[in-house]
Length: 475
Image (cartoon, rainbow, N blue to C red; front, top):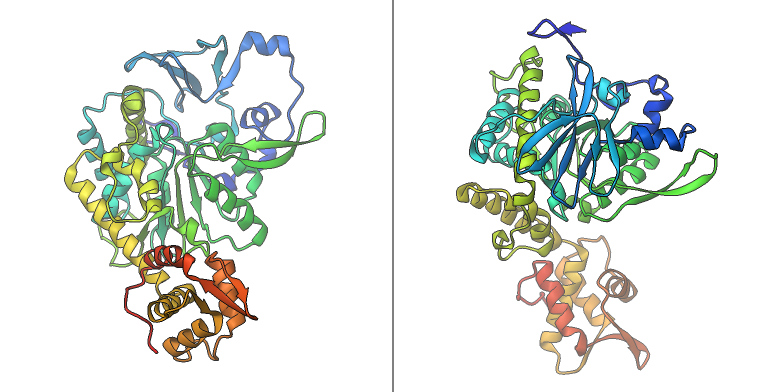
């Protein structure tokens, strides 16, 4: 261990995949929610209380776990009256529960895999706090000006994320050596209970840690080279941005019985990866920074200095105070919705935009989201489904009948595509696209399959979604 500026030994941030699982004690494993639980004495549990990470009570009491690394102690910060707080070792809640802090010997806490504050500290106002976060991020990682502002507000959002029902994700994308991992470490050092993991990690501890600690998942190398890990971790990303969508998995309980368990995975997430996800729905959840698009700033330190860790702790302490004083004052503000963009984009971005006070910053983020909307529409307009819709619209525009046949659609499609698919598509292929991908109703009439005129409103709505103009397909 390297001594920090105060002369005390400093433990560097260690991602969870670098910690040997055999070092987790039985007691720590129980607290983290590992698969096998030790036998407990209910009477002793009742007296010593239930280990807690966080609790928001119905009477407005906010309880948060803190960790003093220098003294090797954990405690619970209890705020009952608008930011007035105490540090306690045992808390009696309004429901009659007795809460105690997690042990400081917990492997994830002792090794600082989960980043905790040590105590609340005054932060001034929100503008001052954001300025401090932005300056810290800019000092240690090279981000574009707009994404720097987005990331600063995302840090703030992570500390009050439980006031929202949907959340966006942040993504750092680029080749190796472009600063993705540095970005994760710097952002994770400030986010609400930042938890570091890797796409190459065993998925079980990620599920258990998210379920027990909550907080912000910092996922490195998220391209997932192995199919089994990919399927499990994608479940976390697919379910984790909407409240109330746990992931069901089977675990072994203390009686060695297989038991279904609902793992809570909702919360902020920041990932680093080289490419993109094949699932377009998952892609739509991300606000992305393309790393390595410009020369690295010369003032960015190659290695993080000792001062970085103390600065990060100081900001986490201020952010804890922000949570204690502002948690019940934030919420979804529908007045910030962006007109003209897809509902999914507004749904994902609403929580972030709701905590942005500066109109100029809100407008900049809104413009970026409009650009994302336009890119999505442009990509859709080049798909096979868009080509079929365009041919179908043109066929209906020129027919006097009440149906359009598959073959007519296929002829128009082939003429418009000009051999793009190597060989002409068949009417059977057209039918598959219509029924399976676009969900357009068809039926058989006089031996041929047709699309009825009654489907025209649905076709026009789909065409607008795919960014198709009103110009008819070539004939």
